[in-house]
Image (cartoon, rainbow, N blue to C red; front, side, top):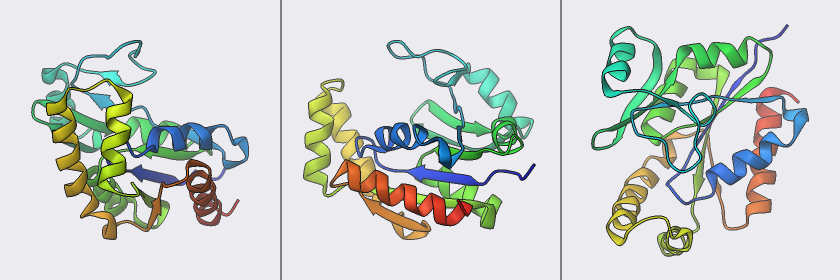
Length: 190
């Protein structure tokens, strides 16, 4: 069985990355498997351990870093770490599925460096900061302070877009999904 490829998607919060990934996962011909990230934060809402994330204590997260179990990890917000366990990459790609990863920009750059030609990095760009702010506010899940932090972080992250294999602007969800789908097909030879 041929080993699957690695597809890395990164984007500022509120850009539609999760929605794009959900739509891509519906296309069975892409043979996508999802990497479950580990995090040191607490579950939100209906999130479940081992399904949405692997929820680890700070101590457990650090132990796994020390043991070299992560292909990437980052302290995304002060005191909150996210990472991808090597066992997750192996679990999906060894089954012949293409691994789709939803990671922050620094993690994406590190994974691309590590897996090089076996990985395709895609940056999902918002049409503009004003549109992004509108999307974040319409979620009605964050305080003004949190939204301000997310917008500042988004501007910082957008500065890394030129380090990705390709940039897709999400000004139309259907068009963005179609463009990402096409990039994956070309890369994975589907």
